[in-house]
Image 1 (spheres, one colour):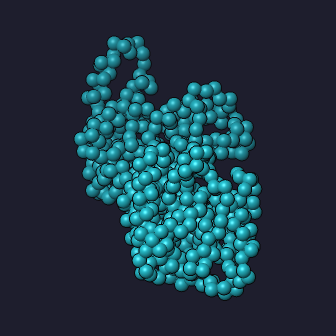
Image 2 (tube, one colour):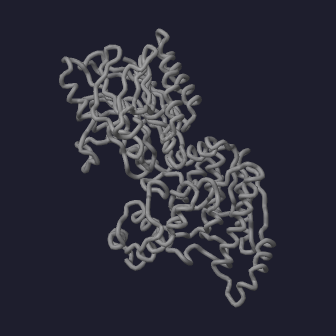
Image 3 (cartoon, one colour):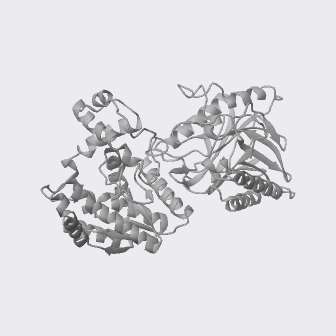
Length: 566
C-alpha cells in the first residue's frame, strides 16, 4: 500500500478552507498513486478549537465538511482518506463530543477511531471537552491491516517514558489484537497528530516514535499539523519510522508538505522508499534556526488568520525590537511592516541611528515621532500632584505609556497589528511596563530569554547584516533615565537567564537553583521575588508565541493574589 502523509496548515473554524485544502492535497496524492492519504488530528476543524466545541453549529459544520470529503472519495481511482475531526456523542452520559480519526472510502465513512488519552497538562485541555474512547480496534483497507492512533494515544509507551501519565496504552491494546493476525502480516501504526513545537520537541518526538517502532516491530507513520494557532506553533516534521527505528521519510519543518511511503508486500520483505522521498535528517542541534522558523511561522499565521496583513513595531534602537522587526519582515514582507521610532530626551543619538539603520536594512517604512512635547505636557499636568517627589519609576513608565498610546492610535488608523517587543527575561522579572511596551496584539519573543535574543539576532544576520552590529554589541538599556543600564536593577543576563529558566520552566526551588548554577541563594531569592511579584502583569500581556517547554500563558497557570514561599 502506498500511503501519503499530508501535512497541512488548517485554520480553526474555517471548514470551507480546510476542506478544500484536504481535497487539494488528496488530489495531489492521487496523482502520485497513493492508496491512502492521512491528515492531522482535527484537520477538518483545526486544532485547538477550545470552547467552539460547545457550539452546536460548529459540530454541525464539521459533520457537513466530513460528508463532503467522503463524497470526494466516491469516484473510482481516488485514494481513501484518514483525517481528524470532531463528532457528537449521542450518549446521555459523559461529554457530548468525540475526537476521532475518520477513515473515508467509497464515498462514506467506513471506520472511526476515537481518541483514548486526552491530555490535560501544559497547554492541553482536552478532558474539558472530549469523551475518551473505551477501547481501540484495528481496521483494514485494501487488504492492509492498520492500527490507527491519535496523537497522545501513541505517547504512553512504558518502554520509553520513565513515568507514564496514563494507566492504559492504546498502542499495546492494538498490538495485542495484532497477535491474532495471520502469519506474515506486517504491522503498520498510523498516528494523526496536532503536536505543538517547543525547544527540542522534534528530537523527543522522533526518539519516542523510534522506540515505539522497535518495541512493536512496526512501521510507524506520524502526520503532524503545521502552522500557528494563537500562541501555539505546530512544526509539522511528519515522519515515517521503520521497525528497526530508522527514519525512512521525513517531511519539512514549519511548512506544508506531503511525503509518501510504501508498506512492504510481506513481513519479510525489505522496506524501501524512493531516495527522493527521504528528506535530509533534521538538524536537531540547530535549535536556534528552528526557533527562528517557528517565530516567523507563528507571527505570519497569527496576523493573517486574525484577518490582518500589516504589523507595527516600535523601534527603540535596542536588540529586542530589532529582532521582532526582522521576524515580522520575514513573516509578512517588508511592505507590510512599519517601524515607529519614539525618542524621548533620554534616548541616545546612537539608538535613533540604529533604529533608522535597521529600517533601511530591512527595507521597511520608518517614521520618527518624538515624544518630548507630550511627555513635558504630561509632567506639567501632573506637577501639582507630584510636587515634592523625585523623578522615578512613574516618570519612566509614563514615557513607555505614551509610546503605547501612540502605537495603538496608529494601529487603529492603518489597520496594522502592534507586535510587542518584550522578551521572556523581562516578562519574568516585570522589567516591562503594563499599558506601555506591553501594549500590542502578539508577544513575538515573549518566550525567548534575553541571551537567546542575542543568538537569534546573530542568526538573523546569517546572510547579511540586518540588525546593526552596534545594536547587538551595546549594553542593553530601556533609556528611560540618564545613563540607564539593565544591569542597574537586574543581574547580568548570562546569570539571570539560567535562574529564570530553572524557576519558570522547571519549577526548581531557590536552593536547587543556587546549587545548580553556583550562585548565592540570596541573589536567587531576589530574582524569584521579582517573578512572583509580577504575575498580574503577565496575565494582562498579549498572547505569547510558545517556543519553550513552559511559556507564559495557557500552559503556566498561577494565581495572582497569593503569598508564595520562596
